[in-house]
Length: 100
Image (tube, rainbow, N blue to C red):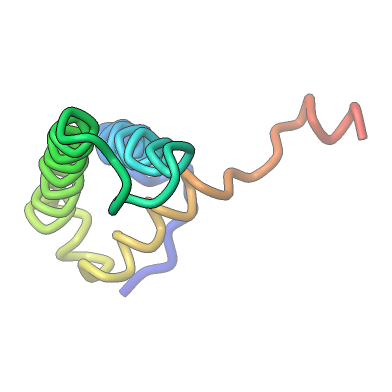
């Protein structure tokens, strides 16, 4: 396995992970409504729909990672962790470094 930098991660995988993470944040936003046991039927329906949207997005990321040629080189798990790290913990850009 080679040690790829985050700049070598395919942009389509980054985009899919960002979309999945955005859907998950929408699921988490339902926490503001308090305990699920106290939700209305309508709120439960909305939550289930959002949960499904996140599940579909997460499956799309996983399938794309598993089927990407880079996964054969790096290993699926290594690529998956690199994609998540690049999205969730991006390296600072030169402009951020100058501002610090």
